[in-house]
Image (cartoon, rainbow, N blue to C red; front, side, top):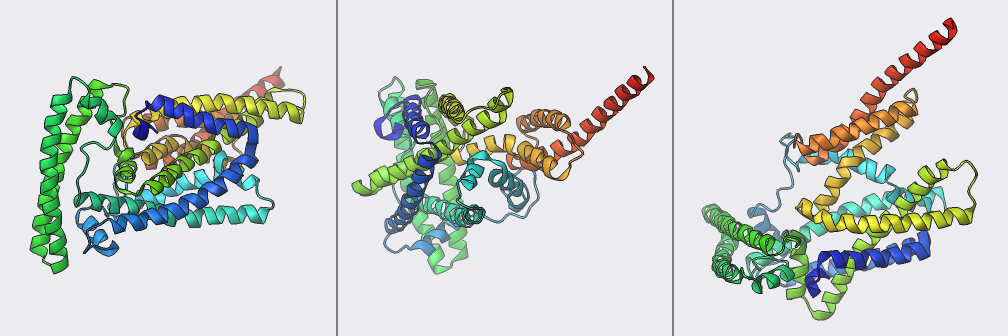
Length: 432
């Protein structure tokens, strides 16, 4: 909505968050389940259709396989990296090892996922849902990432905006920085034309299997892209100067801008609806799970008397409203972390998922560690995890196994200290 209507992100977050908050409070878990099913069907079908259209918009002599070849030579398909470097965000080891802890915590302990299993009509249905979640998630994520690579190839052969968030560039064109922006735009257009020529050279080299031509085109493409990146950095600086509260990171607007500029009008509405439904599904799960844990794990335990069902229902609705407002404000400030939204989500998750998983591991497999020791270990581990992220000691995915291991290790130490303290007090009581 921000990109289409030029509205501030603050108001779009309130509208989207408020809409989901309304049907979550009124309809509860049943409303979330029904909307999730509809959203999933629309999303899957439309993404497949969007992928077909993206390939169809490529140059006439280029198909899917040729597009992937160009993307690979442009170093956009570097999937496999076996170098073990904890500071590198994405390689085989961070994916298999660190990612294992992240996904184990997400699918095994996150209430937004667990609540879906609990709504199953039987244990077998819940198990099937969990299994299908994993089986469908991997190919869907793969197709979405591949779609992004093909959109990248499309922009190699076509005109590219200097900044994909059109709402911010329109504000810039009407500001005191308009002339500066115009100069950058002219330079950018010249570089884009150069890049189209180089991209065609790369395509020709790949078709003729001429390694020398491919290498020359790769170097030229890297040079042009580097110069374009410098211009884009200058534009983001102007946007920040012109509108400090604006979104100067446009990576999340690339696919949306592609939709608005290139697809048929009817399909534009459908794909924008997909983006809305995807976000609405995540938001509804968050509201519902936060409210459930607040009522069951906190509110219910503070009351000595058993709460009636109507009382708990009312408490859960109030909790949903509170967490809804909280999430809206978090969403507004989240984009300031930079990078793509999917990476921001995983960074924020990695702060907490390892510690949460560690608590569950202690509860299931280390029964000798008591609740007080686990609580102390979790608090200390959480502080250490955020500090490790702050000093950039390791890439964010590794925070998940670190958090889990810290909780278990510190839990043992805390239990030993607490156990000694209890033993000392018992001895003193005996002597008295």
